Amino acid sequence: MFNSALVNRFHQLETPFYYYDLQSLKATLKACADASFKYHFQVHYAMKANFNPRVLDTIQSFGFGADCVSGNEVLAAVNHGFKREKIVFAGVGKSDKEINLALDQNIFCFNVESVQELQVINDLAAAKNKTASIAIRINPNVDAHTHHFITTGLEENKFGINTWELPAVAEKLRQCKNLKFLGIHFHVGSQINDLSVFQNLCLKVNEMQLWFQEEGFEVKVLNVGGGLGVDYFLPDKNSIVDFESYFKVFKDFLHVNPNQEVHFELGRALVAQCASLISRVLYVKNGIKKNFLILDAGMTELIRPMLYQAYHQIENLSWEQGAENEEAISNQQSGSSNQLSGSSNSHLATQTPHLITSYDVVGPICESTDCFRTDVELPESKRGDLIAIRTAGAYGEVMASGYNLRDRVQSVYSEE
Ligand SMILES: Cc1ncc(COP(=O)(O)O)c(C=O)c1O
Ligand SMILES: N[C@@H](CCCC[NH3+])C(=O)O
Figure 1 (tube, rainbow, N blue to C red):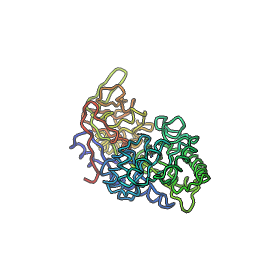
Figure 2 (figure 1 turned 120 degrees about the vertical axis):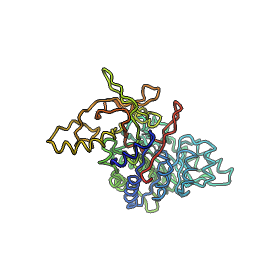
Figure 3 (figure 1 turned 90 degrees about the vertical axis):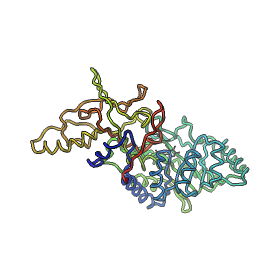
Figure 4 (figure 1 turned 180 degrees about the horizontal axis):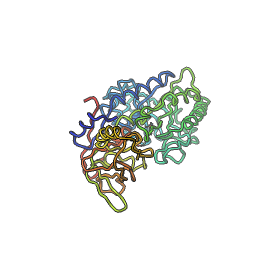
C-alpha cells in the first residue's frame, strides 16, 4: 500500500493524520455494488463508521443509501447528496429534535426501537400533519460471536424490541394513524466473520415476517442491518471483503416475496481498509522489562484498541523504505534468515531486517490504557520514524476526541 514516493510525501507532512486511499475505497464499493446488485439487494452505508466528507462523497457517487444514527448524520447525508428516499434513521434514543429534523427532511424510514418511540414519532408526525414511515427494529436474540462490546442482538442488549413485546407493537401500530408500517429491521453486531451468524439471522427474519403477516401487516422491507467483518490481520492480502459469499447467504436463506425489498446497512466492510493512521515516533524508551515506542498519535486519534482490545497491524514505514534498499543489498549476498513471524508484519516477512525489537506501541495521552498494542515486533525504530496503523477507516477518525485538548486529527487523500 505504501510505496517510497508516498512515504516521502508523508515525511513532508505534519503527523498524526488519517491517510485515505480513495482507489482502495472505490474498488471495495464496486465489489459490494456488483455483488448486491446481482440479487437486487439495496445497501445503505452505515455513516457512523466514517463520515469524512471525501469518503461520503465517494460512497454517495456509487448510489448507496445512508443509514444514520443522529439528526446530524441525517443532515450530512442530505448535504452530501444521498437521496432522501434512501435515508434511514436508526438509534435507540432519538430525541424529539432529531425526529422532527428527519420528518422535515422526508427521509425514507425510521427504524424504531421501542413501543414508546412509536407513540412519540406518531405524535410529532401528527403535529406536522405528516405520516412517518417506520420499520420495527427487532432484537432477534442471535449471538453474533464477536467481541461482547460490539454485540447488539442479544436480549441483554439495549437495542431493538424484544419478541415478547411484539403484540404491544402491533396494537400500537393499529392505533397510530400517522405511522406507516414498512417492515422489520435487525442488526446483531459488528465485525462478524462467521457467516453462519447471518444464516441464523435469516431464520429469525423469516419467522418474524411471518408473525407480522399473520397479524395482518404487509412487510415490504426486510432490513437485515450490517456487521460484516474485515481482516485486521492481513489488510493487503484481504483488502476487499468477500461480498459475494456474504450476500449469497441472504439469497439462499432469506424468504423474499417478489414485492419485497431487502436492505443492508454495511459500515465497516466498506471503509475499514481504505485508511491508515500515520504517526511519528516521538521517543523510544528502552526499559529493563519493556521497550516503549511513544507515538504522536494515541487513543484520541484511534480508540478501538483501548476500547475493544482491537487488533490493528502496525508497520514502521521509514524502515520499510530503507528495507527495500536493504533487501536489494541482501539479495546480492546470500540467503539470510527471515526473522519476522506471526500475523503481525506479515507483508514484511520476505524482508530481512538487521534487528527486530519488541515494543509496546503507546500514545502520548495521560492514560495508562493509551496503548495500541503490546509486544509488537518491529525493526529497531528511532525518533522520527513513520508508523502506520492499518485498517483504520472504520470507527477511526469518527471516534477521535479532543481529550487532553489535542489538535483535531487531519486527513490526507491519495488523490491530492
Ligand atoms: C443499526 C446498525 N446498523 C448498521 C451498523 C453498521 O455495522 P458495521 O459497521 O459492523 O457494518 C451498526 C453498527 O454496528 C448498527 O448499530
Ligand atoms: N465502534 C465499534 C463498533 C460499533 C459499531 C456500531 N454499533 C468498532 O470500532 O468496532
